[in-house]
Image (cartoon, rainbow over all chains, first blue to last red; front, side, top):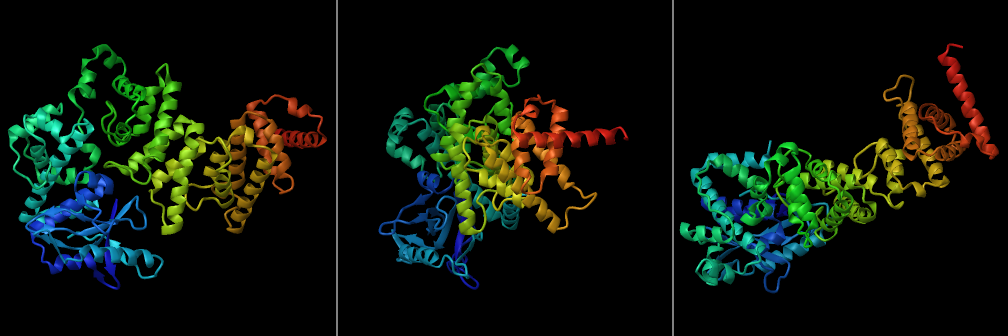
Length: 135
Length: 432
């Protein structure tokens, strides 16, 4: 499966920006990259079956979160597709979980809004996603 | 060279902390995913496995938690034993980690229980058979799988990627190994039909073209389609192959590029060529012939001829031949316009066309089709090439003569022309 990152034209990669802002440590980068490498190879359904992904989230049935227990509980939000549900996944925004609360707390809603934006602006000239950049 | 490995090598080289964290995470993910996958494959619940290792469901749930990270060797050994396997300890290099991470797949996590292990079974069989027949172990495994009612499709996906089929190895044409192993079995016809049904299920139920599983997805698809091509079970496979074709068309229309790579698409075209029981792809082949290519499938005009050759014979009426003659004419004119047809041009278009048409006659083995194409070629001014092809077919393949005695005046006129052409060629050959 192919992984994509949500992108704000002309030059802001939402996911890379999140990783930069939360100052991921080397260990966290390694664990995130490792998890995403496996996710690409397993595909969405099997990854769910093996608990790589948690979801769909309450009130946001298209959004799942990647479960990474690194130094912090990293929870990037992603969706299947949304253009080709059989061959791709898109990372929509980053989040960190602490004491069962997400930071940002509205991460699933933000992810859903971004997913919707991708669908609405599917034919727009400026593309809202780019192939995933490793952390 | 693999981009993935190159990136990973760079990351590993840049930081020791990074590579150690990556390795630890990989090892943890691998063992938990493996316990869970094999347990599910054996149809065991966490509680059942817990009972087998003198523990409980809660503990198994913890062992399957990637973050647990503190497995007890004795517990892991108990789990492995109860799953019919053994526990291996090994110290590995980072090079092997890169290799493993790239090849990682759900199928690769699974291990057969001792009782089902093909490698064990292979060595329990009489030695003589092994010496005489390199395909025997693969044949045994394949026939067992084909006779089994449940028809789990995962083994086929593994075999088509070079995993688990005795004797075959990665990089070979895995589909060919399957055919070689099965072709000599007395019940080949029945097995072929079952194999075709399972390929059809992989396409329709699992949408394997959309979600290819394993670490060599392109090889899987290529081998799957080439296997389908060689089975020639049009009644079972035509519909599913059309599904793949339509899905690829849709993908290309929507996203501007096909989902599958060129090799797999080329194999799909071959499978379509050889599994035709209706005229649903007639347009595809005529596109190839008339335009010298196709907007989705790779190939040249030759691919179109190949497709038309394998079109169901009873469907090729006079209209078909008329369309073929017109399509060839279109190709010829296009090549003229492009300046690709001139004396001494390589390839020689007219010579090529004669060979193609000759091949069609040869394939049908029925001279009556020749009359159709000759008749159809007249209005499009392409008679000479068709006549040449036919006269060559008459000469080289020693067709019987009933067609030459036809009462139809048009046929007789055509035959007369052909004969005179033949005479001219004979004269030329003898220097007259």
